[in-house]
Image (cartoon, rainbow, N blue to C red; front, side, top):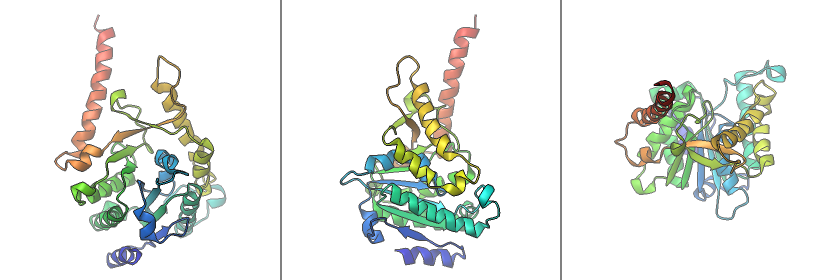
Length: 295
């Protein structure tokens, strides 16, 4: 399986070093086959920010396994302080090792790093490589739940990964597609979704684990981006401001957009799907303003 992915990258003249890792030493196919929850993200640390719900659901649970796929190499990451003079290649090596460490801390079933250059997956050839890689992983893993980037995310690489995810899932036989697919918060939160449209994911469990997972990424935190504080702060804010008239029912929450209909009905246009949510939000704002400003 590893050799097939590497060969595809080499044939397309894409420089990447595919990395598979199972913290408990299982062979990759065996490690992937036990997956129940799978997260597919763009960069090292995206999984730990957006898919903590899946990590915590599986942590220490018999018969539940979280696996991750990180699609790009993270070469363009922010760097200051001790990392200011590091080259792109040096950063790729550091971030790859950090992602492996996160997999160990979170007791992942399997961790696949495709290490594709971010620019490549935005172009036709690289996009096809990404789709094929994800398809092969999905065919083996057969996850029940998938976490990925939401289609209103403002990071273009995240949207390119989402495209690969959707295309790969559409290439699966209908009976092999995941039961649930969530578009998660990273570079834009989902607080703007109408409350009835939010998928509310309880991530209150083991804050120490959540902090440790993001804290592994020293190259990002010391390098100028305090994702460790921001990720946990957003979760507390989501929980507190979600319930306006009662005490907090959940301590920490991440919101997600339900992408499952898109995966099981290929006739749905992704842009229309997202814009319907935005239109619903706009109509709600207009209705409230009309109520109080029309007299």
